[in-house]
Length: 218
Image (cartoon, rainbow, N blue to C red; front, side):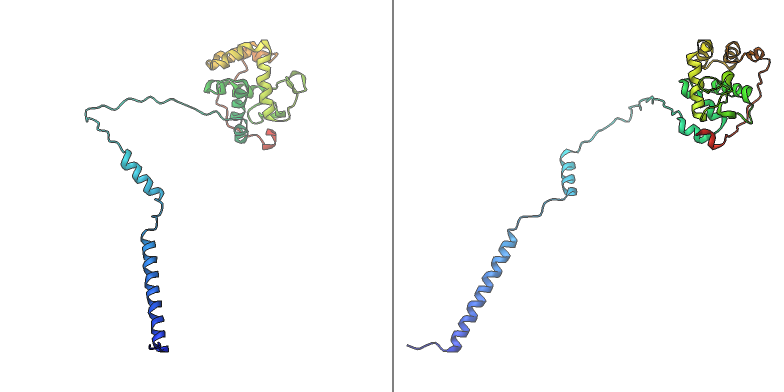
């Protein structure tokens, strides 16, 4: 019996290692081949959904477009917006806002003319009491002062609502009556003891836009 030599043993070992490496490579390749596929992306899922659920709509060319009526909407400036504007026109709108009356051209015009009769246009914010309102101002006969023009607007509206003698003014402001009608109600009311000479002291020229100091708004 011939004993294996060192050289033959080494060669055999190398062959075994080569075979093992080949077997391992085949195993790795086989595992890679049977590995589970990666999950589909969101784009892939969307494409599949569109493909399976897409619909088509054929519209005859003779079909006329429908008439669509869209609702109207508007926005009313609030106290902060009007105070930031800072003008006599803004204060007139603020009185109307506080009273729940329309901020119509007729109503704003009446308020501006009324304010001019009480304090003049150039100093309409005098004592923070543009309409010389005695209601809650601490002064009889409309000589009091309010802490701010915002409070003055609220108190003017409050006085008109709570004194029955001003009901004609309130009704006409609510209806946005023509200026002459609302003004007649003002003259007939007890707001001014002289009743503005029943309109003899009333002025009809356009009231200029005048801005009050920022401090007057509180």
